[in-house]
Amino acid sequence: MSAFPHLPIGQPIPDSPHAVSCSLPTMRSVRGYEEKDPEIVRQLTNGYPRFVVHPYARQLAAHFIATTPALHGRTLWLTSSAAMARALAVHLTAARGAEFFAQRGLAGVSHPEAPETSALAKTYLQNLGGFLSSREAEDHLVALQRRAALHPEEIFVGDASAEIRRQLRAVLPGTTDADLTLANCGMSAVHAAFRAVNAVQAPRGRTVWLQLGWLYLDTIAILRKFTAQPADYVYVRDVADLAALARIFTAHGARIAGVVAEVPTNPLVQTPDLPAIAALCRQHGARLIVDPSMSSVFSLNVLPHADLLVSSLTKYTASEGDLTAGLVAVNPAGPDAAALRTNLTGATEPLYARDAARLAWQIGRTAAVLAQINAATPKVVAFLEKHPAVQEVFWALQAGSRENYLKLARSPDATGGMITFTLRAPGALEKFYDRLRLPKGPSFGMKRTLICPFMYLAHYDLVTTPAGLAELAASRLDPDLLRLCVGTEPVEEIIAALTEALG
Image (cartoon, rainbow, N blue to C red):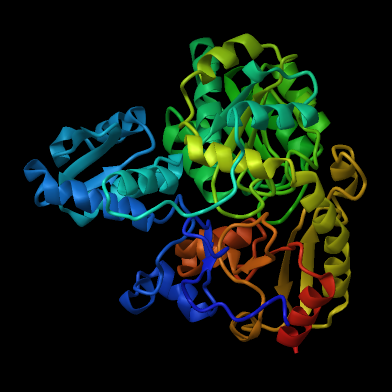
């Protein structure tokens, strides 16, 4: 029996109501998802939790609207906390009729039905990770007798947050529980870290932020939207160009608040010279935020070089693929460690108790899962690099940044499962993608192998406009780039599926 049966459009990946991915098996379904084609959207019951309001949350909001006369004719967004709801209400402004909502221990924001207001609210909650957890919504639906029972799943029995931190301390030596802040998702962690550094640096006259290389879209959104003014956002295109970075520091060093780097980057899997960047930051008083999500905090030792480590624990740590979670870790030896700890207090969106219990059950398996993935990934890379239909392959140990990666790797084989690649023939993407039998959908870092046309899912506005294509070209990003994350299935079957689709 094949490890990769056909997954119809909309099939949750994994088969759980709390899955973080869903099947988009053809390029038509990808485009239809992005363009909100009704025929495609009606087949999608879930999606990546920061981008799609979970069906349980929609059902719960519909219940409150139906049973609360003041909400009739209004749209209700249920949020991850009261603090997030208040921030959203401020973002939407009273002029749009936004009102704070609280009932049964839940919080949210309602507003008169209006597509523009809904789009603003959804984007804000997506950027910051502010949607209500599917498990929290499920708990309320069961309590309201709108669902018969909770979805059965194995969980950690005991203090889940303490267990998660215990596991994390093992790979972040020198940290204490006070240095480790858990969040409901990676973007909440990124936003909290950004705010914590700003709170320290802005009173010093430091408001400029440097984006090192192409980062994940919502990290870019946070830097663009929440810096003090447009000129305070600086994009450094080439992660390897230390001379250019040094020139920026020489010119603006006294105004630079922080640098944000993904190690490796998403999606080109490039690793900058992190020790050298850290030295520049320390020399000029800037704070360095490092995100190792592409390979995982269990694979890379980046905290000694960072002021703050941020990571999506959704990736690799929650390897079943059925929850989101995030981490902010303070480097206890950093110059502003005490102030950053203080500023992080209450800054993240909380990890819901049942999500924490599920994560605590999974996190102890991370090393074993990564060992399987790390053993398979070089074999898939070797196959792709030799295949005549493949143009370029990017992964942790690619030429050009291999040495930088190995400086940080906890072991020479700790690569993580991320591979991105392009095809040689123009226009080959659709035929390859549609023929491929591997699971296809958003997210990565789970036991399941997962592939997606990354630029189409993350930056559809750029792949569909001349200006967007020019922006991608300037950053050396092929719009048809494929992002493949190797899972724990037999590597021979992964390669066989790729062989079949490549022709």
